[in-house]
Length: 263
Image 1 (cartoon, rainbow, N blue to C red):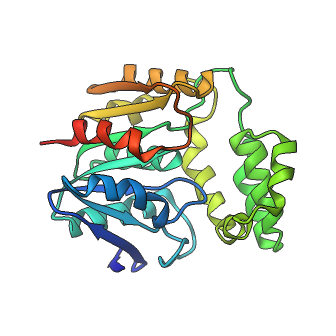
Image 2: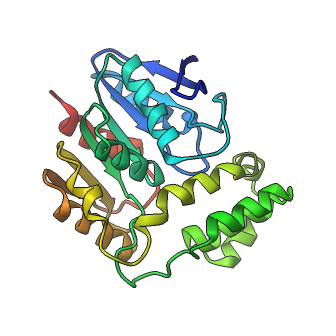
């Protein structure tokens, strides 16, 4: 484990693996840097791969108040550590964070996104507008388990009966430990889950080559979001992976990323 210091003096923990042009992996909700390790292992034969704990998770620090800009600065600090520019792969909410970083002009050379959860029509219910505030109230009251379930049902759209079955899953304590970062996730996603076209300024500002990947078995709203994003990006490409879902299978995804990220 190594660390970099972000602009607001927050320590960000990361692992570095392999040799070659740099790629930074940006994780999704409920994940720390360990989640990206299997994919990093497969990419490390061709690239230098950075996995990191987003702020508030794992070995990274955190500071209030939260702002999306702070997370973009964290990624920028890692890019400086990588040599001043890097390719970036973002997964789910991490894909949206990566997209916003690229739109801000962070030195990203190529961008790959796996299933950014974009709600651009009425094909799935939108999260409540005040979901971030509801989550913050639960966290402040020490009701972390309830925050996890609220995010799963209202944010992700999981059926309540499935969420109930997961209450005693072995990984549940890890979810509760990261529950405060769910407020961060909903803050990142707020403007791209409105059931409306994507913000014009956001997508038009991403002028680097961008690959958007989705799974063939994912729901229609996820497909629509991916297609809409690709159509809106100046240099967008699309890959739909047969038989795949929102869960990443590193052995399937790694060859796709290698092909895209190769110099």
